[in-house]
Image (cartoon, rainbow, N blue to C red; front, top):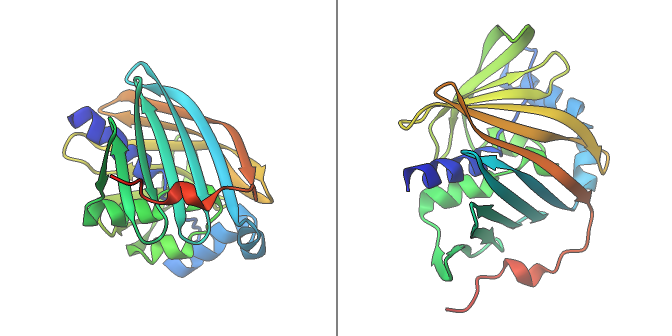
Length: 233
């Protein structure tokens, strides 16, 4: 169960992003927005569908993310053969596992509400507004002179985010009692006029825990809003 909870945390923290090279968080947000494609391009993306495949602790895993702005979101995860669905229609926040549908806890709602924000072309300002962050200066990581933003997201623990000279995030370090989650975010590609990272690798205690890669991403697709509604018991 601890490993499953750790993986679910990884799903939720795929959300996190900003950019930097300035001295304030506002400057960080501004540079990130420009690096992703600009606010107009971000606003032009009304919906997105992403599919991912990869490995978790050596086993095959897959994920589908469906988002319709501003409030509808669904993440379907298959973890070693077990399907888990988390979703919201903006009012109900629910989770389905092994045929059982339950309401999310308050803390899960806070995390899920911002999950995949950047990577779904939802921008960064709202994400940073969902917590408390400060610009902490530069640090060299794998030869990259990174700007670093540190803080904590609402409903989550402390996190450090690292941004390359263009403003795109490439590393996120989230502190966890079960082992710090060190995520590397790479392979940015254009989707609907904005840049989205296609590869995520998470390292815990020096070992690769999860590697997920987007196999397909589509912007402004038609998605039936009824799928976000909580199923009848």
